[in-house]
Length: 638
Image 1 (cartoon, rainbow, N blue to C red):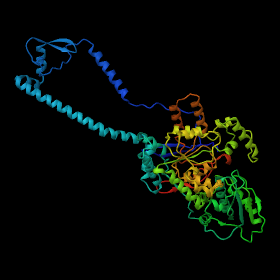
Image 2: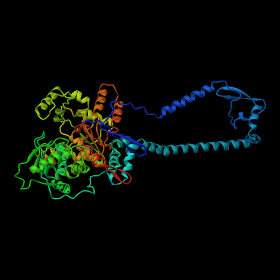
Image 3: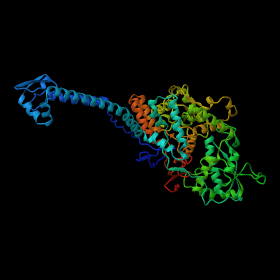
Image 4: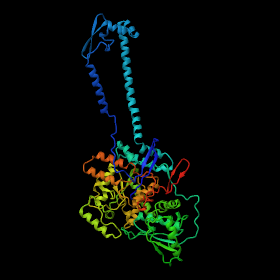
């Protein structure tokens, strides 16, 4: 969805400095140029040294005056003072110095006078003693310098490393030592170190590796979905029964089921287990009990609403009243307009469930209930959950991290959005025909080029590869593909060439997938589980799967989720392809563009039009996540 508002938050970084986090929903169209960093290099030092040498030589080039100091070796025959004058050679130039002048200079210090009063033998012994003293001092200074360079140098480099990456690896390590909420992050560091130890990445790339896997700072936030102290015990009375058909794909149905529970609570109605859509694009015949642990669902919500498997016999003969609720409706709509219909007919059938309840302006008890449904009650059935956990363990080979990529480049999505960048004319025509064949897709004529430049298209596999490489992910990164088959002949080649370790449920499981054949919603459930537990989640289109997974990851301690700024990113891609910017400049701009788009906390805001608001299920803050102060937890309501 598009959004027209910005929220700023301040978080304390590990070094105590205040850090402003911008809402990742927005970014300026103007891309600022990063100033070149100033580094003292060996070349710079040499240059400075050479310049200094030039100045000295220039000074020596001038004629010597009698005021120049001349070092005399005491053991040298030229240092013996006699009558008349001696000739002293300095840098090839001869300077005649009168013995009387030298004597006068040497008599001023008392030590010098004592030296010249000694005999020749004593002076030689003293010279030997001073020579060995000087050599010993040089040896001591040399050893001291080696020790300080080796020990202090490594310490200084370590301190500089920690300061440079304090926003990532240091913050991660500090959070890992806190309470149980940071154990997952401690595991992230352990997995990264294991990856380094296994040799999958070079040790010199460890710092960048820690940075790309580091998690956003969320230590001031916590889940808050428990019943309030004023929660009233559910009584046996009911105003009627709600039947519903959860329409759409898996995640659209999830949202609809959550809303149906909340609406049943508002109207004090009994909810019959929802039926699922079997007429969508995937034509999956799976039922509620196939996808979800239905007994757990009923047990978890027993203190909120009454839920039954089917209508009781006394109501089974009643003709349900069909109703299509208005999209994004408020609390008052169901209380004043729908509840009277329920009381009159006793059984009401909601033909659609998607987006039937507003994102904002609802009582806090209703918002927390929606989250209890989505993140606690809607647990996948045992076969899906067990295989999902198996896939996770296979992705974590050697205990290393993995990235889940929602590459929404399937045929139906491209036909729906009208996007055909980098596809052939024949493939574009096929998408155009499909769009006209689907009657409920209202938009038929679409300018795909214009939509792409506005950020309305899914990223292509090649654009996705460029994004991951520019952000610093190495070619050895293990990637779990959360999607169906990519459309277009050879479209995946760019991505698989750059990142060969790409897996999917089909490649990680063979015989185990047989019970899930022809059940796309069950397969989507597997992908949901693996994506939720990934170390980094990246999505290329803001569809229902992306909304569901990123919202759940926010609820689970704000796990890192990269939300591409597609509009500005594709402009950079075009500039790079046209040779206007180098790869180094491209990578630098991409990193800067996404530094605040990693799933860090920010408040969801109400908008002028509900359809343009950020989805409650994509960002349950506020509503289900609260900000903590020193002695209490603050619940913000919208």
